[in-house]
Length: 175
Ligand SMILES: Nc1nc2c(ncn2[C@@H]2O[C@H](COP(=O)(O)OP(=O)(O)O)[C@@H](O)[C@H]2O)c(=O)[nH]1
Ligand SMILES: [Mg+2]
Image (cartoon, rainbow, N blue to C red; front, top):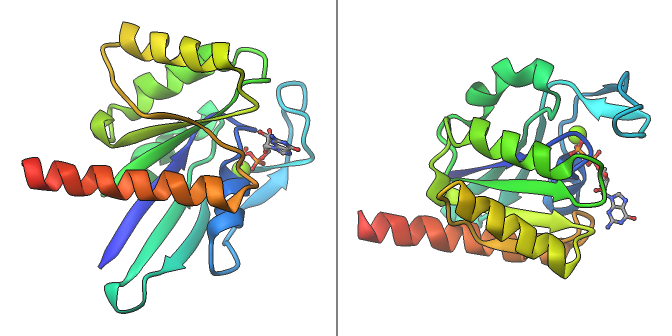
């Protein structure tokens, strides 16, 4: 069995870091020099995709895909998300314009991925960020589990994956 999980979110939200943290293989990365340091000040950024794996032994594996966050790569989003069991939407709440980005990513990716399979993971979030996120989702007519998690923390990511898989099982049972 191959379970596909996609990490989505704007540049600098922690997608590559999250995959690096939980992948059991050395992730396949496509980092290149970041030409948009005025937006997110980091030396490199993903220009293709990230890929990692978690082995489930005789049950198969979980394939972890990260999309490139920049809008100019949006043609790759439906390709990379195709067939995904669920999406983890990352957001760094300390970034300027993060809520504008959040709304944009929710609007775009719910065109390709079933909204009921989304999980939101907020990094550097305060209680008011969590409230704000829930309010935004409610305004969009959406319900998604919202977690605070650090993309460098393996336990945080394991929780997200368990919730994502449980949600998928529930949808399967209710179908
Ligand atoms: N909470 C926390 N987050 C961090 C720290 N260092 C890096 N990060 C997160 O990791 C992000 C950079 O990760 P990267 O994986 O390149 O983002 P990507 O563009 O989504 O692939 C930062 O913008 C932060 O959100 C840290 O010290 N604390
Ligand atoms: Mg990246």
